[in-house]
Image 1 (spheres, rainbow, N blue to C red):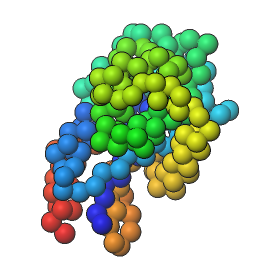
Image 2: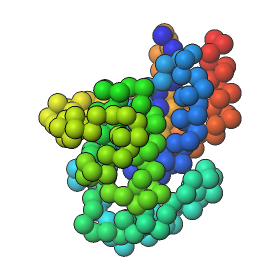
Image 3: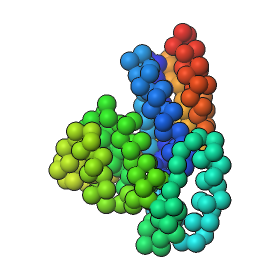
Length: 208
């Protein structure tokens, strides 16, 4: 079985920058080859940074290059969020939202993930409250009440943690794109995924 594996993290700027490209490739080739999105758990526990001047300055220094390379928009509201000492940039909560959608509405995974990143980077929304996800869920026709009940449940957190563990030995940074076939897992790209180049590579893989 041939499969394209995309490893990302909701708080990863380059993953946000790639969101249009990877969803376009998935939509184009999704009927020809399996696509799997894995959340990587970039910032967890004690490694999750809290907002403040240091983080805000770091993000402001590095985001312009990502924006100019990928064409995505990073808002002043997001920069304000990076300076907010009341917010911890934990990957667990948004990753758990993505894993829940993936396990309950698998065909919505890529679109929902893209929307989650957009509401943070473009709208400056926190990702640690259920309410922030409600408009995204409603837009995709997803059961909001079921999400509220199960998002941070023990079962879903265990599933999310298991996905972190699955992704860890495969990821060489965020994002990482892999190709899996009978011979094993093969690294394709890390960092920026140029859509045209990615399409070219996928076309070649489908011919093998």
